[in-house]
View (cartoon, rainbow, N blue to C red):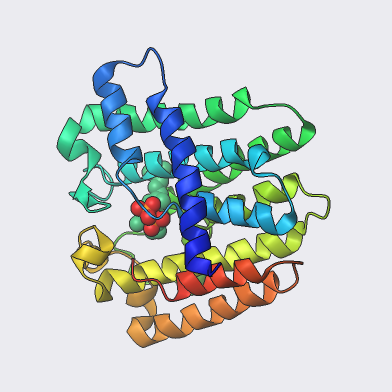
Length: 289
Ligand code: GRG
């Protein structure tokens, strides 16, 4: 099976479990439930859960141990997008090709839908709790998504708006946390369940893949079209955002993307059966949305 077909197959397997979980919730106020489902079912690449499941496959870890974490990370990612789109943050009208959550349900309900998805993420993994592996994996998820991870990245990003003298180190630190930490968690969590964990190799791979994901995101903001991207274009420039393109220019950002792509490939090559992780890095390097 070629890589694209395998990605699609795992995505479909994952989405069936994701929808089962979100549809099957009991006792949720109907408007809140509808707002939660609206964003979870709006599509998206499902990049983090597929990355997690493909890493599990490379490490010989059973999908049944990993699926609750794959669902949880997509809930966390979706909550972060709902909150990021709010007027107090990025103030976006479109996401995944559809109106943003607050445009449909109002700001208050969008905040609550995000809060509910965040809590649901931890409920999902705690119901499936069992072993010391689960405790380590849950702790990684909380640390990498939380105040010393993605949320600090978002705080730094907001504090650096209109900062025209930011350095490469500052920019990297923002995205190491904001975009990188969930991507790193996606490869580290399966390693918690593996006999040969490849922890350092996977952490370094995830760090470079996260940077690559962000640099390509910045490039797409200026080069893609709305139909491919599903969100407002030139948003970064219009809101005076610090990005890899504003710091290095278009060609400079492309060169940075090549370097971190090659780093990711080098680390994936150290993992037995890591070829699939190389293909995934290549998909991010060449992505159109
Ligand atoms: C609000 C706590 C809080 C955090 C928000 C992730 C994030 C932090 C904000 C999103 C802003 C953004 C556009 C970041 C660039 C990289 C990124 C995470 C893009 C969106 O992820 P994709 O491309 O989206 O995986 P889909 O829709 O495919 O799931």
